[in-house]
Image (cartoon, rainbow, N blue to C red; front, side, top):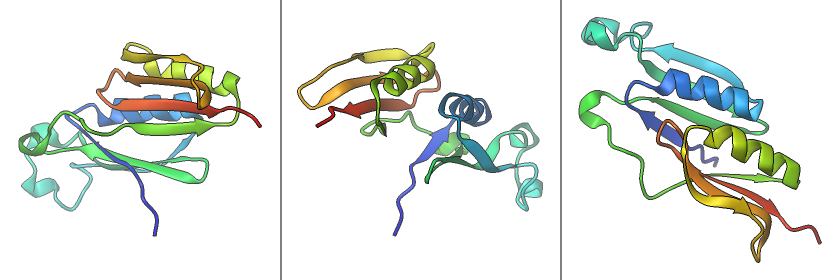
Length: 136
């Protein structure tokens, strides 16, 4: 069994996943718009350029998402996408890149469990946590 976070957006999925790909060094493996899908004829024309599904590979992990139909979209809450890294420099880099134009919830800092830990909501509304464990 594998668990992959699936993020829902309200028309900003394409921009968000291009941003995540750039920030993480990952690679978009698959992307399909509503207009490219077998559902195109049943989808209103103004939704054709929205993303039906996208898969981003980051190392050995997948982050997936899509633009929810407007009647099904709700703001993300009650979860965070958590990234664990091995060194403080990478934690600092990811935190700075992903939080750009977002809302800082907890500045990246040393905690009793981590060399670096911080929380933010990115510019697309996705909540994140960046964690770098203390060595030894």
